[in-house]
Length: 173
Image (cartoon, rainbow, N blue to C red; front, side, top):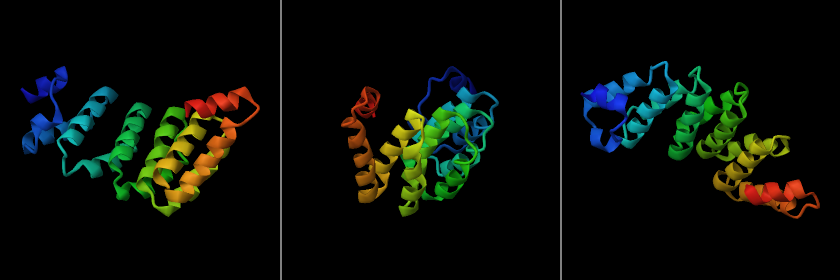
C-alpha cells in the first residue's frame, strides 16, 4: 500500500512519521533511476525528520542526475548540516550546469563557517548573472557581517551603475 501511495504521490512525510518500514521504503526510493521519484522520497524523508537523512544527502550529491543533485543542494541549504560542508566544497570543481551550481553555492554558504566566505566571494566576479546572484545571496544570508557587507557593497554598486543591465540585475537579485 505504501509503495502504491508513493507512486501516486499522495502522502506527506508527517503521515509517515518515524515508522521504520515506511522510512525503509522511502530510503529504497532514493536509489530509483527516476529523478522525480528520488526527489519525492527525499522530500518525504525530510518531512518525516528521518534520522538517516544527512547520510543520504551526502550520498545523493554524487547522483548521476543533475536534477537530483540540484534538489539535494536545495535541501542541504534548508537544513544546513555542517557535515556536508567539505563534500560540497569538493563538488564546486565538478558541477557544470548553472542551475546546479547556483544551488550548490548557496548550500556551501548555509553549511559553511568563516571559510565559506572565502570560497563564495570569488563567484562575485563570475560573468554568469545567476552565479553572481547566488553568491550575493549566500554571502548576505550565511557569511556573517563580512559576507553581508561584501554582498551588499557589490549589489549596491550594480544598483547605482550607469549600465541598465547591471541595475536590472540588482533589482532582480
